[in-house]
Image (cartoon, rainbow, N blue to C red; front, side, top):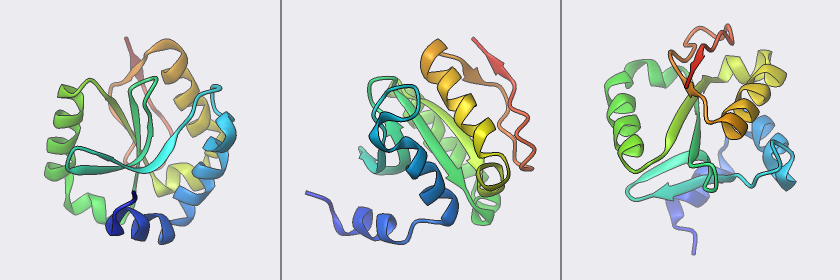
Length: 128
């Protein structure tokens, strides 16, 4: 059963979240299933591929004030065996193809981000 907060987040998705969800639907990205606004313990993540243990977060302007909270959340998810990649709304809206390609690479090869772009440049550097 979907709790009220998850349902509210799905209904009030940002345009960037909607755009990326359209790409994820029906296993269109890397042939794997993504879930949206999914609860992992006491956190709700934007998107997750459980089979790849990959969390995809789309950060809006408000995340600039919550960097410490985001870091704590990422550490927790990492401790649970998830890899976390973050994109800004601008990344998704301006470079959807690059965002999707980065996610596909991460799913298919297990790459981890070094430093996610906060500036919307889509300049993700990856490491093993």
